[in-house]
Image (cartoon, rainbow, N blue to C red; front, side, top):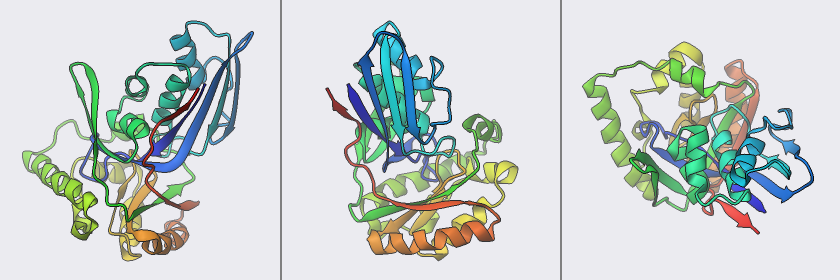
Length: 284
């Protein structure tokens, strides 16, 4: 069985651990019967160990109940960059192994319901975790929106980024994020309502920038100055996401990306992406 799942960009500024769009970078996993476990990989993450410790192998063998499998992974999603690579891989591996609920597997492995939900449902999603597990809903997304991701070459592990967050936040900051996120959801459905201030956040971006990524504020400002309708961290970083008006607006922001990275003393790439509206795809 073959399954393909898209990358995702969690948070969207104020929507911490709750909002994410699916993006047009993909992970494909093929799981087939074999005499013994064989794991192969190409593309992003190909340098990881291709054995029983590989995430796709751990998921597939647990679902199937044995390790007599041939597993092949092909990924376009950079690892450890804040683009939901582990959630996409978990969702695709679970589906390719025949799991009834790939979303539950994605959440179980990655720990973030919004990344897994975007990889399963596609488009823009809101997600939470209830008593019965992850719950998600697809939201309206203006069809003209394009996305630019500024992807530095260095990784920023999610666990390290979590450790930079304060254990408590002021009530005013929590209310600030709630109000911004509520209006942002409406604006992503109608881009005429979008503005850079809707991507402002007081829960995670500032703390992470101060501790781990001091270049981030300047890069975000540069993306907006280049024409983005708003910019924010992608997940726990270091990738930054710019929301753009149409292909022309996206192309201008993408073209500015390499110069912004160089000016910040960083290496990396700038990619123009569409939202993935299909989500998880399975071929039996």
